[in-house]
Image (cartoon, rainbow over all chains, first blue to last red; front, side, top):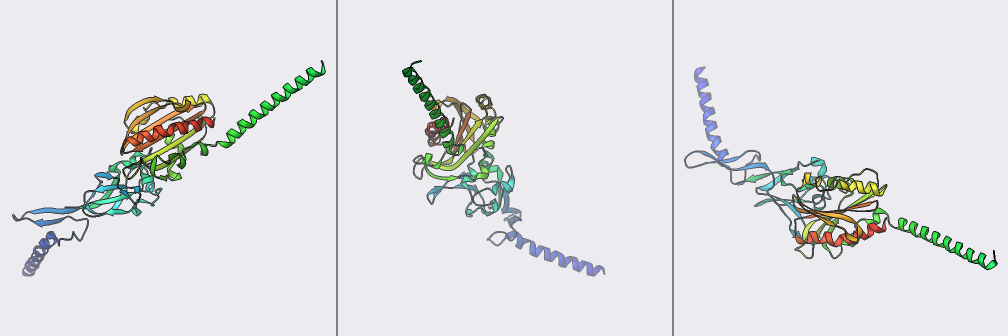
Length: 145
Length: 199
């Protein structure tokens, strides 16, 4: 009985040690689970975070001219932006009065090397709704190296 | 009384009646011609001043919200109307993105309107946005002030003015380029003139 337990434990340990380094090294195209960090083993054998998915605010606004009109873009420093949200007054419902529908229908203009979300101009610029122009009211998942 | 005297008197009475009726007709024609819908900013007012424009949704264009934001009292208000356009100020692709909006407020009396604008001293506006400057400005006899304030995207230029029982609030918001203040100062005389006609 004791022998069986010892063998089972040994098999389990072998399995764990054979699988963990593979998962930590990643496959070079981003983690399979977007919520978990991708890590790599450094030369010294220490595990160091290489890239991870983070839920953050954009860091700047851009106002590019395209198609005969100006646009408003919220820019995240990470890649592959998704899961955008607005946490200003009225939250998600407030975004639904925009000409492009609610925030989950807004268009990502770019996802690499940065993430740029188009914010409908006539919704964004309402003079007495300054909260719509504050970066910290916008959130999205993006992949940071 | 002689016949000629009677004739003169009749002519005077007739002339007076004609003048009174004429004035009444003129007054009613004026009030019928200029509803608040006609007084507020139109797309045609902006031609030549902006490169691009898009009208804001009715849901987002509330005269009450605009008035409250700037500190205007809405007590004894008879009617109000606001419009708002997202625009690109100036010419060509170097124009400045932003918006222009106007709210027009008709109060029950002149005193009510005067009392309503007393609250607009920048302190209320300053609760949500830092005030940079204030200046007395009275285009076309509409006595008011321009308040320059910071906005999360740049700057905002507010004008609040009164004439009789009417109050107008005009604002440009944008990234803070020179065209933004120019747009406000160019539009104010036009809008102020229309406000006077709506009296």
